Length: 333
Image (cartoon, rainbow, N blue to C red; front, side, top):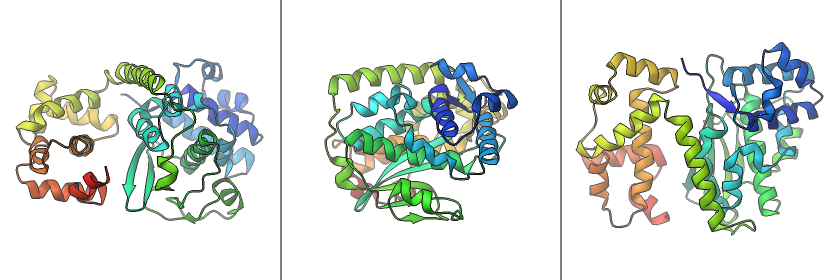
């Protein structure tokens, strides 16, 4: 059964953040049966649930529920694996975040990222999934703190988000959160998210380098392909992309193409944290964004390419995915 994993580069950042909070991680790794030496191996990966247990014990030992915010102090591109360098060489933070979303699974598979245009802002939206254990809120808080600190470090400017969203209720002590984020905090939100001003995301980056960006894209793409090929999710997604222009693909057809029974396909997708319906929806959403960036495709053609027999179903689905109509989305592009 395949479990979600976290890259050693991200795990090392977490360890540095915890050690800053006075936690003896070498001892803690032994207690949790995790391999401390593997933190130095750039290709090593740690089980998601192992990282969840690490956060939980670190909170117990330090007595500090806000310990995840220390991630803001360990900013270095290597924490994001090759993705950090791809982000650095992007033209703008907007372009960098698009890369971060594309290659997110290299860093950690337990997180889903999306970067969405809003009427007067951009939102980096984060969902954290557990494997067998529910995810630690410190994991999400660490990701938000790190992403913001990385933006500030990269631009050399004290970027202040318009708002920070947290899924849970407010902590007893808000002070560490106010100090790290320096922005309005909203709790009990639907997702974890950072909301940025459009200008902050569209300003050219001092580290931009087009030829380096292409090189990092190649590295990241190859790593992701190696890492993904063994996954049924990846194989099923490729089949869906081929079948969609012929109409909505049935689970049976995808299972047949992969030489699996429908039941096995469903079980393996479940083990990888998704379902057939969810994967179909995600694939359509991803392709919709790509197709709308091609001005020569009409909205009707895009609806049919995504396997919608009735265009009104496409418009409904699109509004659910992006909170705007396809026409509004394209106008923003």
